Image (cartoon, rainbow, N blue to C red):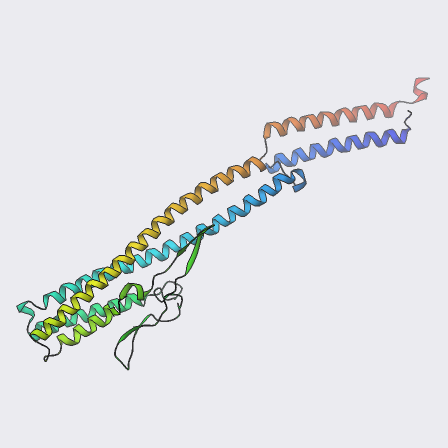
Length: 304
């Protein structure tokens, strides 16, 4: 088979172009530190990378949710701590009403004044807002003040709802992010607000004395105990959630490290292999160039 000069030039130029492309590709791999420069380099690997990148993005979002939820639960825990201490003090004051030193109207007024302060503190806690200005303890009605005193009846009422805001912290795990003032301060039809309000009114009423004041104190003690139980129950629940979040966060970190390794296995460049391939391509290019140069110098006139 004979090759014309044009055909020979085409073959040689095509060979040089292939070798040049190979060298350029190796150079770009070394510069980018990546084995895959485009999806067609490794279609299966490209699909794996896409899936791994999506999983990493999901994990990052879950971790952001966990961070935000941790802040919310920490804030709630702080309010529960303050509520617990306030109700404990109210309990001490109610018990002290039966002491002889507090049986006078002066002593009763002093207790009523401090209970009034505690009642105001608890109402402020129940109506706390987060940095965004949303009410923390109103369920999903975050723009509604949870606790308010009805001017018509003089009773404290809960204005929020019982719904909880669910937050996804893992692929198949959602956790309630909030507690309601209803679950914390209201129990079995009784609540700490109206209990204290009624006790304060009784202490300031001279007509309520003797067995009547004892009965009022006994009733208040029972309802305060119930309020403490509710607070402690919610407090324990939050502690359990925070422990769960810690475990889930640890699992996310492990998965991120594993995914990062898998991404590296698919994507990262093997330097020794890339350099060897580049040297091979350059040697082939140089050999082709030398061969082409020699062939171009050949002619029948030079052989005569």
